Length: 416
Image 1 (spheres, helix red, strand yellow):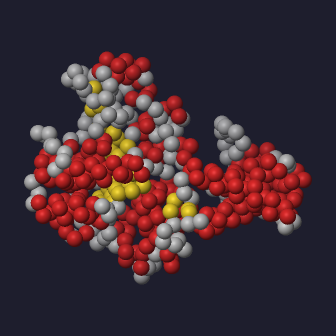
Image 2 (cartoon, one colour; image 1 turned 90 degrees about the horizontal axis):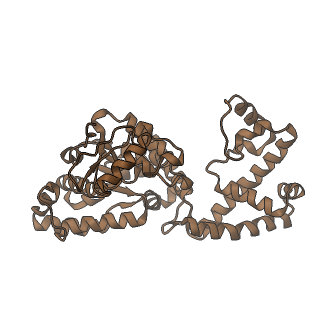
Image 3 (cartoon, one colour; image 1 turned 135 degrees about the horizontal axis):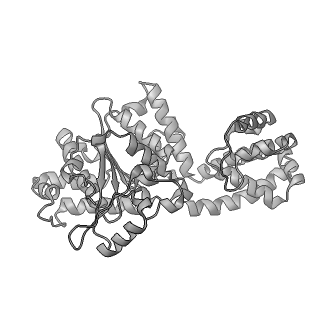
């Protein structure tokens, strides 16, 4: 079996070239991400020394990952990390004039290295009068959200009953109060809750639309099940959606009063603001973004969703007004384990598939497992690695790779 192709580091680190990179576990993804960042930083410094670090946007999946990346960049610039003989990027960085390295170290503390929601917070907070997001508003963590939502639900449903809300009273005649609260919680949590379902006519239109779809497997109740309901249930569905939408809006306002925004609200408002920038050439947000990011790096790209990819694409487009911004997306579809938080591995697969051949990279050499163990798994799970695996490397190294187009959305296909 022939070795899978390993994209040369010299090509991956070229700051003038965009990439979508598949990097399996243990292949040195973070090491290369930091080296790519250093090359991008050097390129930005040559253009604009005073604001070089502000011209390189690095998006990570967690705050911990952002903190680690920032620390590793500081170690590289400060000389605390000793370069290996073949580490050309770090060797070159160590040779930069001391004044340059010190200047960049000062800038790194405020460099945009953050989660996608951290960036959304920064962007929206720059223009509070346009976005309606006050400075100091922060993203709410999922655990905190669950606690606040639980307290809010009880109070909201009780208040609706007390004021004689028609939908609340009708739902209580049909369901126990705990069921009504569960329905409202589902409405708040739903990724999408179409306004048109808040009327019986809208539910009827949805019935007609879903009836045209081909049957498909279902895991639990979905909107497709609307087609199986008698028309007498249309009023109930409309009441649930109507009451749920009102609760969703009220909860969002409740969080804003506390200086908080949910992740999906941050994404939605950022998308809306970026869309407004794109429509209006005189928009001050557009001027702020014009040429702002010369380089955009996204780590753990397999855990991105379509909404976040839309934000990144808009940023790249608006930043490229004067000269094209380069992108570096890296991840491993086999490690996409955050589907329950909205991650969509198909976003990675689509980006990889649609990228020009010369912009599709692969890191296939892993140093993590013992060769014999890796070989056994490779032979036992050829469907996971697409039949493109080799184990004929030096004793401490193993070569393997994954076929991106074969990546599936079933959980069993996403773990290595």
